[in-house]
Length: 347
Image (cartoon, rainbow, N blue to C red; front, side):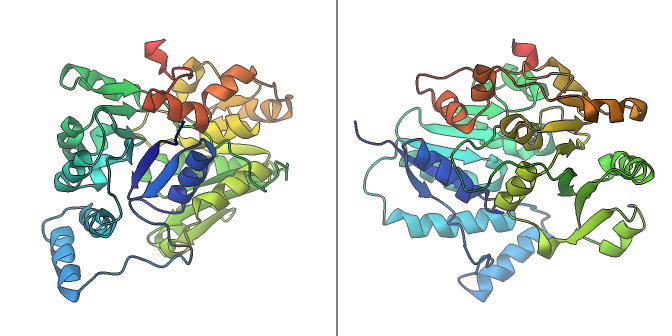
């Protein structure tokens, strides 16, 4: 049987497109990247100065947050058109708000029936305009159960979660004794991070917390000295984050207020057999939750050290497999066999 071809449409980078591509290839797909990954880390280059001026006008004057990403995708699609001479089996989008309706429709024209899929790992409510693009997709998967309420308006919303990458790589799972977190500065979670860092400082717990900040000096006044601050120019690629997650003792997960779905950190912990400390109270309702492995932080620091000393309990292999990328991709593309990935209120 010939390989299915999938057009991977993801406008964010940080190397996650490369990891998705590798895992898709490992799953037996021919993969075309809409936005090619730049190994040298070089930024997007505008075709002309006039293009740059127009995008800056849309971004700064018209307040279109996704203006640059949308323009990048338009340029990449023009470059791609001459290389595609037949319809693609699947077009898989991540975060549809990064694409203009015009580009989505053009991609729909070159995609086979029932092959237009979007995965929204960021809440729909954070990007209300993104919902205008829903009608162009055959299926849109959401990781936040709160978004399923829009089923009354849209017929094509389905539940899923994030996943962990399960293809083989050269990075071995180790335990360096550290509690690890990396994420952007966000006022909705800064107090939880500050309080945790102060507790760790007092109890001599080995941390590796890295906060990406737009204004380092302002953030330095907020976070304790055992929190590392990174400028935007030093954001780590996704592959490096996975390497650090594989080497730590415990993954930390401080949730942004607008989310109730589980972040990628939860599934990295699950996939790589790491303990997890999280502020996401909903995690207790998932089938992978075990109190030895996952600790919900909620003004209960007095229970933390006991949790860290408890032995990790291995999960049922079928539950672990359920949240792997290889099962996830079969589920969202509706390719048998797969385990359905439902959200707690769907079980």
